Image (cartoon, rainbow, N blue to C red; front, top):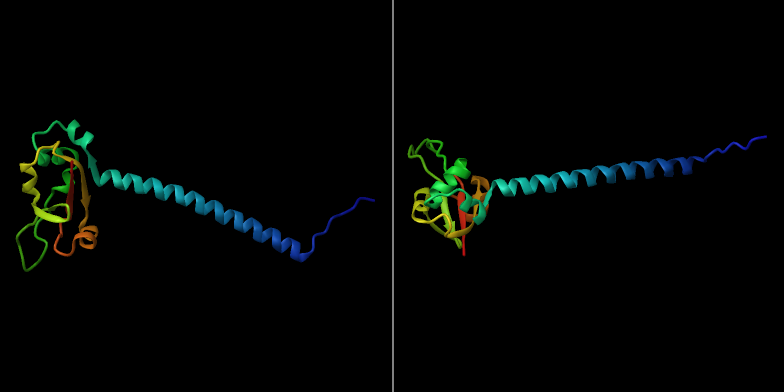
Length: 141
């Protein structure tokens, strides 16, 4: 006679829980890889290196950014019903505000090592309120 194996209820429950745990761990590991990839894509979309700026072959930083990331400089009209004046992105370096987008025309494209863009929400968290078009942060040599 053949021996037939019958598992008890606790053994079946343990196997089922182990299977579910392994599936959950696989899902978490898969999501973690996707998240880090999206984070690196977002970082590259929100920053320009000195190498990228040099490749733009522009006279000043404003022109280089206009070629490489024109959406950073775009003004989308008034930001308030009470103030109809359109604003532009704010420029910061070392925690100090230098001016608006036109300030970039005074700087050479190779005068900075990195340029980072912060959207309005990120800019408010990092630099305080009052930057509805975001902030461009410059890192100098």
